[in-house]
Image (cartoon, rainbow, N blue to C red; front, side, top):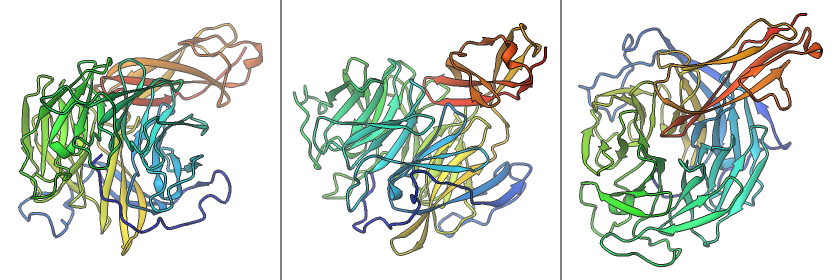
Length: 475
């Protein structure tokens, strides 16, 4: 995520947490079309008149989440088949189902009075939980699928954890935005920190917290080479860190920053494409870049002027999706660098983050300006065409003593790294029923048996989940 200047105003208080959790559903069906490009969306004023704006495939549904502030609001797919997001304005982690039912889980930390906890990034972990960063409270946290939150304080004061990703070693990796460092944390909470050396030197022997950092690590992703790759926006470099902590950095040729503005974020977000390259955004230069694991960069200019490409994620097949933060839009980008920009139907919108869910929809968080320093958070579910990209089905005859098998169909085009199984009886987890197969017993007669598969994909190590249609057991 691109580091943004945080406004000086306090987050708007509201009563979303009268109880520890509240479930709500507020959806607006905005747009329905059947074929991509079959309908033209009126471009916002910043867009070039020569750019053809495509329409989404399928339904475009908007869910009103409530008041927001100018930070966080990241979204990621979870292994339970739902989407998870950060809501810094109400100091909570949110969960939204494919049908739009939203539940909030308050973070157990006292937020900064001006900026909140800084619940900025969230991603799926290798332990079946979602992991997130708390930028202003200097913590990393994890949340179970049932909403239990555990937090871990970082040993370096004011290091400001920002980006987070699952690594190929089974640990979580976090960038320290104010401390020139990368943190590794095990699923049980053991923390190791690694400094980022300055280019051309051995680097510092210790990490020193400072808001005047020279590297300012932000976004991070698992790479195609079993390393971690991260963005250093203050110096226009992309870093690679091995799972042993060895750092190498590569330059990106961006426009020269304005005088006395060393902290300008020339680079935004980074992810791994299915083509085996790293893909990243250049908000200020209006470009998307592709980098090989050897550090060779190719850049592609967005067809919409001043659109500020920011967040980037993989889609099904070889496509990628990006937010166009300066143009009230988002776009699909092919592995050849071809853009298809799509305008958001909501006026005064700032797309924040995006991720693809198991049903093939693109989910996008969106900050809508209501008045000066007053914002609302929206979540959009956008049809992208291919339909479900992860499906689970029970094979076999549902009768006592007859073995059932959980079958997983993956059409995402992503490589499966691991699959976890959970068998359900009448929608509730059956204890210790975590194998690919399950044999119904007498107590299962007339019960509805289904299986849930949680799939982790490589190399990005994102997670999707799907539950089968239940079968009723007979004798």
